[in-house]
Image (cartoon, rainbow, N blue to C red; front, side, top):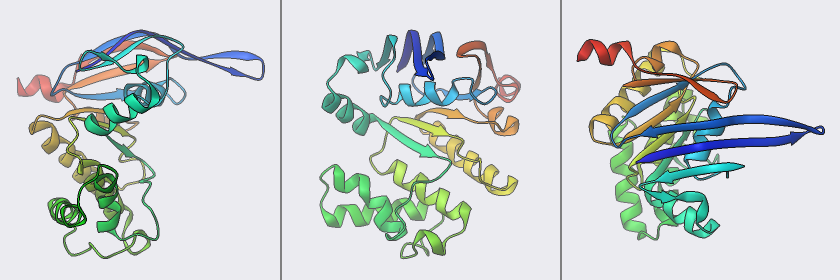
Length: 231
């Protein structure tokens, strides 16, 4: 499903070369649930957005379903991303003047769905994440946890096969974090492939597989304790 082969990403910062990823190679099969852990600045978020087709590598190849993403035109890459990948961020990225339902409708509008289909699917997804009674609320009228659940519903709008999450529980209390990770486990059980950046060791261990990143390199790749116990 997702594959990186000898991927390096460098930046120029104040006349110095900064290595964000250093010859990273990994495979993430369909249906996997992977957490990416490591210190700040280790390259986790760089790796995540590169898997999502949003940041081209300096060298190496990134593939989705066998297709080399960065050999595509920007428009071709956008189409591939829109059809296959859903993103969840720590900051939610909801539009403040739209209701919860209207925020969830955005990907459906961009994909050309009719207005009736947009509203019906958005309502169904908000019901799924427990916000059926909050559809007409704007982000400022929702708690932080509710805003993240709206973001989850929006991410599901186009039924992506791949979910990429960057610190999805970073702004949440432990109880709400547990709820959000529970949703990810449900999505994974339904066959979705999930890659999640997190600083939370408890959240990380609920994935099937833990990848540790340090100085732009994958230094550890193991099944989580929870997955091993389940086996």
